[in-house]
Length: 235
Image 1 (spheres, rainbow, N blue to C red):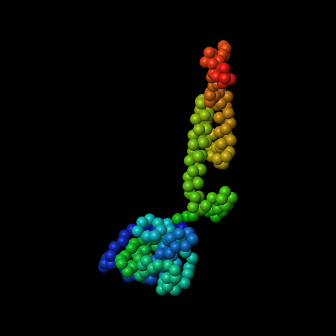
Image 2: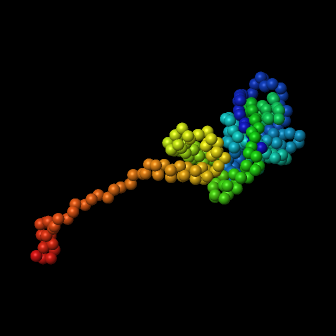
Image 3: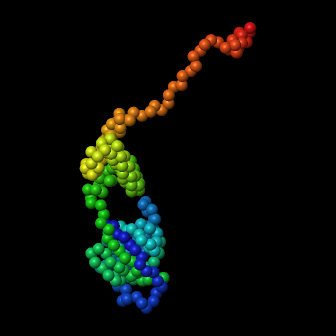
């Protein structure tokens, strides 16, 4: 499950904090195969919950993955991670979609808003992963490839509509064609586009890339050419 964490406020310790902290927390800075990140661990009912934060600071809006429950001993140990902050925390507001919590750390108080983000359905996530594996693409390129595909699709549809209007005039129903092409794959859209391009080329035959130039007809050897031959043969 994915979450969005937003730092609403960061301040030094003061008496304005509403209510005492409830349980302990720790923030670890760590690096693994997926890169640098933060682990925010919250004590709850004798164990730790929290998030793997895909960032190196909590000062901005960041994305995080929910961590499975793990031993409360992580509140005291660091392993191969670096302890960024620790202290106590309390929930200021909480519901099924998240809430706001105050982290009372060593250097101050940080107010975070945690919002649960609905992820991809399992079938959709599986399809994306299988496509990446089949095409040999790295997972980190998935977002860019999706954006590129959407842009290619937008351009193909725009060209299809333009050619359709030119060829069929008022008889071309753009809304119907867009609805027809919408569920098709990009490859299928291109096949429909190729049929319009073939019709367009028949109606407006393309000009050849180049035309051969006529060479002047030979009327006989010039005096210069005859002299060159004489020199060549030692005449």
